[in-house]
Length: 139
Image (cartoon, rainbow, N blue to C red; front, side, top):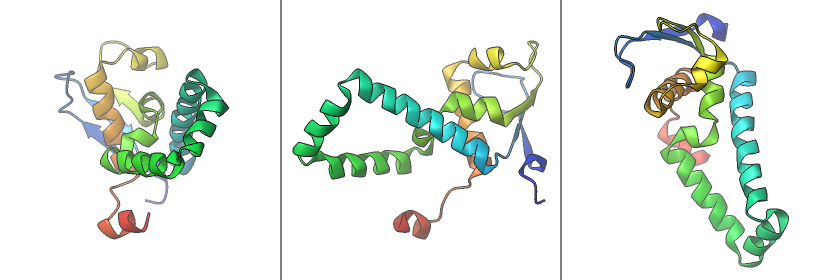
């Protein structure tokens, strides 16, 4: 299959949603970037909240920029969802479900955390299977 939209998976064992079936699709690069951008914008907002540019300059002056980058990379390697907004992944990746409520953006936002995490991880795995050890080493 050459089209990402043709690659789907139906999930049946969903934490916090017993008896529910959810169909997810593979995400194309544009949809993955949308989830990554949403995560980055949230991170920027957090930096603004804790002092913005002045805070970043303070970290740089202490030599913490490279260490912060290393910690960030290690966190993403440990949990690939750290680089993506979970809600955005679910919004663009869930295409059908058997829930009583209709599949709407509002209802997707109401999902329990454990269900949201599980679906986001499954969508990300379908969209971007785990990198090999060599790929991870080479960054």
